[in-house]
Image 1: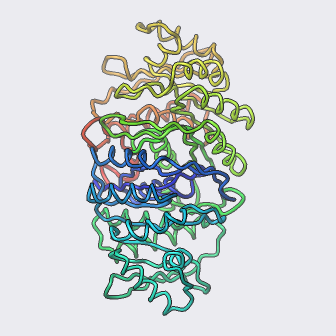
Image 2: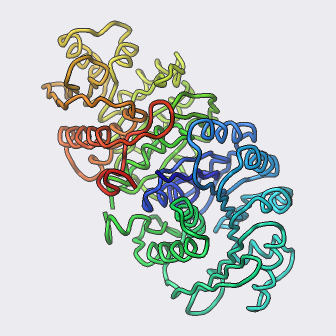
Image 3: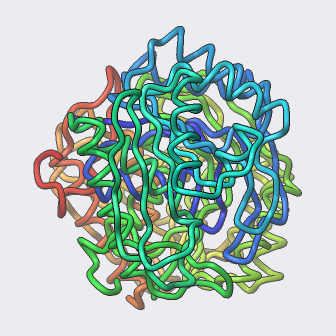
Length: 265
Length: 265
């Protein structure tokens, strides 16, 4: 019975954060659990408030899970601040997290900071060395590396540099690039793999990053290799974007349940 | 596109609370959203910690949802304290909640209080009068009424008394009764309906109440009448109990996705 624990923030409108993660696990037939790091008051138009959870209580949630159900994979999303990153890294070592997927959530689509500056430093130093897979988009890779990334060769250099921070695999997501295809680049310290999909023209992009990282964790929990999990996650998210139906007045969520609900519920 | 907002606590182990609610909405093909009232550090054996969310932030989450996506039904679960009950009741009036299902969560399976004494009073006075459906089990009905409920006639009297508090429909759940069948009693102020199902012998009962109330909300959001929604919710939960597979060392969760995953993932 594969299971995944997500350690992330909550999105009241259900499209991103632990809600996107739990929906992804449901869609991919793995048992989902969650340790919540922060609550956001949020909808498809933006974030109107953040309540950060005390780091000790994030740790208590992780302990409660591991005392009973050892997940086959763990995914992290919004971690808010350095104290929470430190707590999560400490628990990752203590409980010997298997298959840790670190989604480097830093800024919301609407521009709200979801990780403090010292949180970025703590993520780089404490959490990335424990990651099986880390999934920055281009803006996040630029923040991690403190430099601009523009050309195809810049992306490969960035993947090398982030992998050298200690993550075993790096996926640099191409969703923020221009062009007709979205190309994700996976680097494992030795070779590069590229995953291409047609760019989907849609306003329903809320939660795309959370969903992709969670899908990788779900396929890893089911026993797949990292290259296979990344490919299957990319296929799942591409279809979830393509089949999305409008919800809300801003960037609506992807359609997590396209396999089950079809074009609508 | 039917949608439901749950206003409830979070269960880190994924079996109860907003996790059970979101899984139920996914299984029943309605779009799920959540305003979180409290975090619990919890597993299938018990609750090891509770972090109550400030009432104003519960209100902020509800406001963010209603500013963008008006849900077709709202369900409440763990509300923790009187301030949160007051905030939720205020927002229910302000936003004119449609089809409010109040699950009268008071005590965890392991005996931890999930609603303070003054919270019970606030629920009785402020929230029940706004409810389309309220779903106490026998111990909760006893706390609401401050009297013992033992006979079949006691149950009907209790349903009358709780309905008189202002809820348009009351379902008193029979899961805590002895016997081969579990009988739920629905009262709408005029007539009684009984819903029977064989009692399922299983340790996997974690989140049963959350799942039942959420399933009622989901079927209401899809346009069903209250009697039909209660019947379909009962069928769904009975099957989720019957098909549950073991997770954890205590009372494991029901199997929310039996329609899709079959006997296992």
